[in-house]
Image (cartoon, rainbow, N blue to C red; front, side, top):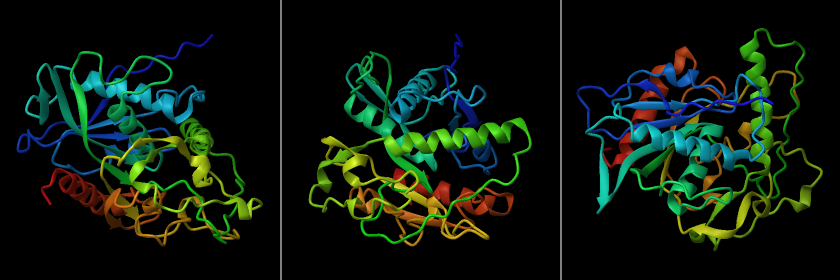
Length: 318
């Protein structure tokens, strides 16, 4: 039997900068590929930045509990981090008597933004169907100021859409162990997102329940109908507010009939999220590049600036 060892705390991407010791720390969750490499490429964001990579990246092991299981594991890492002696002592917090809650910003690229939403559910409700309540064990907790979604797409298929998703055929075996592991992680991530149910919002009950029953034969990748992609019960009236940093361009698909799955909502400035809860994404910021190359060296200063702006917007400083 293989015993998987998880890190106890999050990795430090950027230490707290001396000029901004009281800025709200940002926690960035890995993308579908499972690593935090892209976040290490960012220029200074003016705050402490922490990252969480997929601890099962090297083993290539799937998460049987899917997105909720990942979220539980990552919330525990976040809680250990904010309680550590290395955490910025001047970082903002709230207190209601004996209980202190450290204020944090939470987000990530692609899958990372969806994981952030699931972690926010755990923090807000404390509910955990597979164990003790999270964020309520007597130690310092966390309060999520807002979510930074980096090109995270609303995973519900647009009702009546005639968009065609292209099938990309891998003609060459990827070179290098890590690239092979990243490809495997992305396949596992897509399968998890396909069955994940987002926490239903009370504020969205007036939205017509879109369904994809009229085009069941259409390839939808990780997308599903709204009925299949949300919990049956209302989990919260509204999720924490979010700012979206989205890629400007579509993913190039030379020789392929159709678009990449991540571009189904590319023409929508909020990547479909108004269908989840109106106003959930309060601001959409555009950055050069496509979904897969928005962190390329040629775009790094632009995406750094937009992520930094997203953080300031959520803090009420921009």
